[in-house]
Length: 129
Image (cartoon, rainbow, N blue to C red; front, top):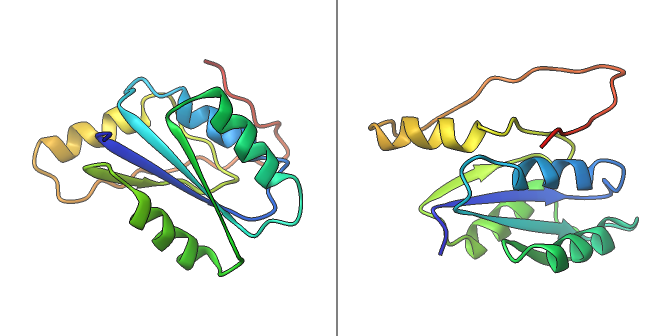
């Protein structure tokens, strides 16, 4: 059981997936489990998920027939074992202290923690660990 379950629903995002997952793995707070929910991808996303899971035991992969993002999030919720849940879109990245910061707010009594975002256009997506 992990303190925080990070759920990443995905469909045909082979171009972004590894960068997204690596940003989750690079968190300063490490008691996390990552659930990749492959929603019937027809590109290489499923194989990328399996490869990433083979590299880190905190990653679990669920392959399912296409049912949409809400169905994928619900599938992830059903599989989650964390006390807290964080949803991450499969084409986004998070800063290394995201989980630590939001968890700190929750543990100080917040019922819900929401973060802002920064939009990048025409910039390569990279994570610096």
